[in-house]
Amino acid sequence: MRRNPWSALAVLAVAQFMVVLDVTIVNVALPDIQQDLGFTAAGLQWVVSAYTLIFGGFLLLGGRMADLLGRRRMFLVGLVLFGATSLLAGLAQNPEQLVVLRAVQGLGGALLSPAAFAILTVTYRQGRDRNIAMGVWGGLAGLGGTLGVIAGGVLVDSLTWRWIFLVNVPIAVALAVILPIFIVESRAESSGRRTFDVAGALLSTAGLLAIVLGVIRAEPLGWSSFQVIALLAGGVLLLGAFLRVEARSSAPLVPLTLFRSRGLTTSVMALALNGAAFLAMFFLTAIFLQQVRGLTALETGLQFLPMGFAAIASAVVSAQLVTRFGTRPVQFGGTALSVTGLLLLTQADATSSYATSVLPGIMLFGIGIIATGTPASIAAVADVRHDQAGAASGVVNAGYQVGGALGLAVITTLATSHVEGLVAGGAGAQEALVGGFQRGLLVAAVFAAANIAMTMGAPRLRPTSDQLAEAAAAA
Image (tube, rainbow, N blue to C red; front, side, top):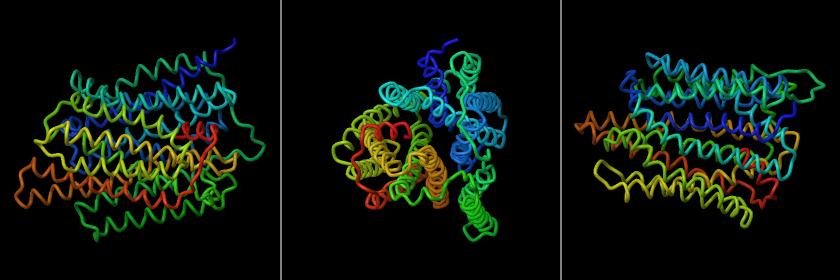
């Protein structure tokens, strides 16, 4: 039976839409999850971080497994795992269960997403058809991020927070049923040893988890406590072991030679900072709008919606600006806008107007965060060898996810510490929450502003249309 490639695109795009939707849909449900399951203020960020850390930590392994074991097969494995853990997360009864299930859900996403992208790449020839497919893929991913906040609000207000996870189940079941009809199996040609570098994936992810946990535990225990020092030192040692394994591996998860590329190195750091600023802004603002300003989950989602539209418009315009002016000026301008947006948001409090204190900040941030990420993604793959383009794309995506999780841990820890300090000093609960929100966004602005240094060190490029298409797909 001959399969229509555009039917395959529909299946792949819906799957990617589901994965992206799951990242943003959770944010507006966080206050309800905290109240229902009894999360602490510091522990709540693990609902986000557990997913993003495991997702980012295993993306490269997921891509390698898809190439060697079969792309359709790993797509199906990731889809089933994602759907099953979504079901169980919707039934979770305590914080520990939900955090563990979110981590496993991230593993499902790390198997599903690179397999889907690989199928997309081999299904369409380079040129017009592939560019159309990449455009649809990227557009639906952006739409998923934008609609996630609205969908989350509708589900939380009309049903319960549990449906933000349960909604994935029928989608996953339907995709699993129709997958064999529209998508053929494929795998990469491999004449050498078929190795997956599981050790590299485990060491890197365990090291990052230890560092994040050490940062979080520093807030209640203090930076000089034995537990915090042991976690941070253990994380560094694990990451050191990861680098040693990669240097000696015949098929490394991350070829260390990639980092000889100045464009890739500066871009990964820039996107990691972007991820930190974005996840922190979303996390803190969602809680602020509901717990300080008293909005419902749906009202919160609607207040985020203009930022999503601004981000989509920025993705279109920034690519054109890169073509005309090069990567460095656009990245610098995007950084300035995102920092300005965060600084404007720090002026919001319990009584300030949405139109004057929140809307301008999230609009500028939405424009700036994409205008920073687009040129960084382009510069990342510009001077990488063609046979390492897939690995480079994986490193870029993993850098964004992992940087987001680490940055969120640091920023929320500092924000929570400030809230507790204000309460201890006699401030009211609402006043303390506003102070924590403002402190957290100020730290996020520092993370975003660090991109100025990355911009100064990045190459200035004017990419070809093919490089623009590749970068858009990577982003």
